[in-house]
View 1 (cartoon, rainbow, N blue to C red):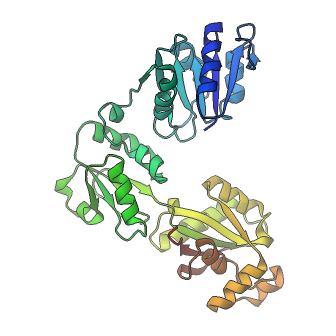
View 2 (cartoon, rainbow, N blue to C red):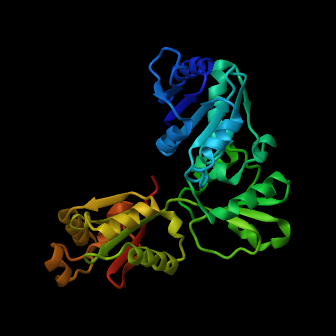
View 3 (tube, helix red, strand yellow):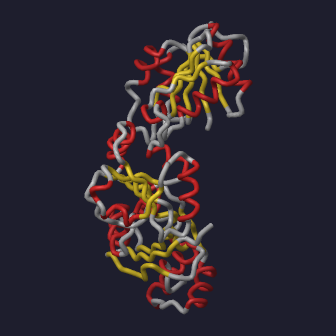
Length: 355
């Protein structure tokens, strides 16, 4: 996490320099013109213009000033807790460190605790689940490296946890890392980890947090935590639009009963590495794109005796893209979905090998 530490007074600038030197995270210090502490701080004239410029350039923003000033200057930029930076506010005497924005997903709560320690300040955390020492679902997702689906239900589940309702935490026993996730959940404060079968007993719980890559219907309020388990191989014709590729991924994942949120990697041939639609689709999903050479794909085709197309080979030099790309991307030898054609796009899916 890279920080920006911002002050508006000379005393605040002194504290900013002290903080920057005492923490292990990289940090840039910003001081108001004429009110710096004589150090190497970046100077600014307008706080609102500064924030407009740097808001999305840092994972964490640390303000040393009144909380009201921070609220007003941030208001035009706050969008979504999945993307907003962690925001922490200190008074210039260094007595309180307040987690203001993106407490769980952005890491502001942990950042507040970390900044408070070297200056012997009091961290101020107002998130209900933290105050009550209960495991928030979004914090579990962050610490376990999982995607949240649907995201807009998260606040309702966390409210159920904070209100003491019966919220069950269920893990799919079919997951390769089932034991790892179970141990980690218990380490993070989950008091009881159940299997998916308990969800059928709707009288025994009020809401559910479900760790699985499967699509399923659950009657009670719930949120899924999706592990990265799928490697997708993609082949596409030139100038295929990103929307077509995205729709193909939706259909392909649905066909095998898995969530698109569980895609860990997308793989393709080197001939497609500059395909604009594919690059846009991958960027929008936020997953890595792995490129394999024709030689790597051919070796995989031969090893697993995959079917080839003479037309495709004449076009790009290799007769099958999506299937060997999926197997190589997942570092596995078995496909969950063989080559399936969706208009201008071909898709194959493999399960990512346990790593």
